[in-house]
Length: 263
Image 1: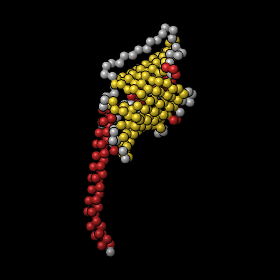
Image 2: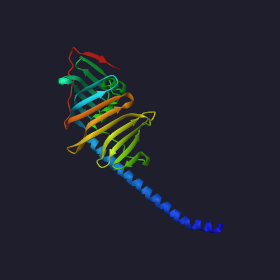
Image 3: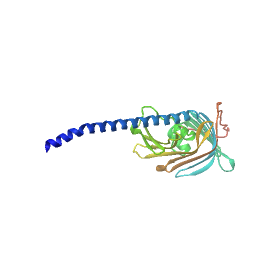
Image 4: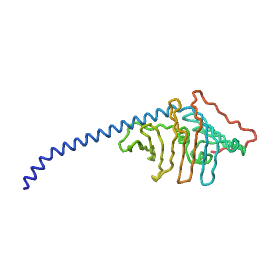
């Protein structure tokens, strides 16, 4: 009896090896094809983002936190990757805030109260004047709806396909996780979710109402949410223009304005 079972096992062994080989081959082929597909999607996103350089934006902006809530109209000019100018008007078209931001420094002019704050563009300083805790780079990415995603050395555990969606994950130098929710049929990012040191959600950005402007896809509706700190920012663009020439901006500060310098 034992001899008979042993013979059966020997006879089954080649079949098991063949099945295992075919499964490994097919699975490996699927992963390879998926990786190529992910690379192509990320390449399309990056190519679109590279086209967004000098842009003029108009629309409505609203923000809310635990202390205040405000709404106004927004005019902004962005030169990627290093500068942004924004003017926010309140009710009746009265200019309330004019802001000039670069990677190194900022100038914040409160027109209504006639004072100016100048200082380095640190995350801490920007969090105070913008009332939303966000870095300079993330602010530019948010307002322009553009970002460069790493598209090399893609690991099979860094992405997941689900019907028409791709969930792509990256990690920064501090091992903070960031998720990109991408529409695979259009190669468009619809959501970014960033995690903190504890592995909890830090913030989420949603992009929607994409429009094609001379071959460039741009989101007209952008929402920023940091639920843990009850910080919210909503932007609805009504007009978007890509400018080939160099944008020129300046803030005319009256001599009577109080100047405050931050470190």
